[in-house]
Length: 188
View 1 (cartoon, rainbow, N blue to C red):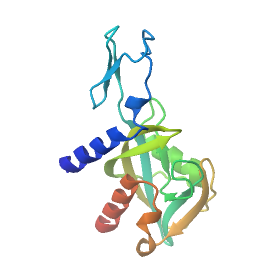
View 2 (cartoon, rainbow, N blue to C red):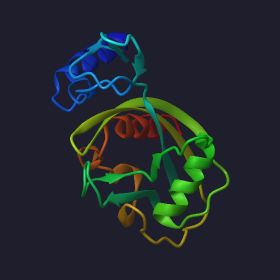
View 3 (cartoon, rainbow, N blue to C red):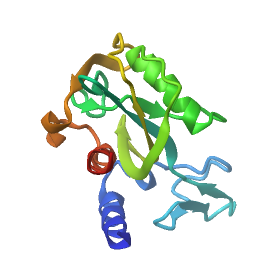
């Protein structure tokens, strides 16, 4: 597992979208091209000696299983516009991840869930407006014994139900979501 992470990390460092290529000026002293990146998460200014950390952003995804299939949303924005994904999104500052899951599901699908369970975690690269953000993704699941009324909103343009056996993984937006879905289908 660690080897897989190390290989992915080395590939990410070569992408022009990687954060190390985005910083031109120290945010503390303003010196141009003074940042030295340690290839993990730390920038250090060679002039003022200040340190800037780049840590993963927290995001959630929720697998909602209903009698007619698993709930998916069609993404209406980049990255991966037009792909399908489970409802979810980024945590707000100081928000518990469980609250993020409930909020994002409601915002994107109009489904009110109150019974969620932690499933698995993963990591992902989220390229937005030319900058790659590394995310720490937390996945949850909820099983409903009814078919909810749905309405796409926020950054979802469509809500669809897909039976387990009909999920085409190449249509799923993000690798961490594919891993979570595979894990869920195998174990639940």
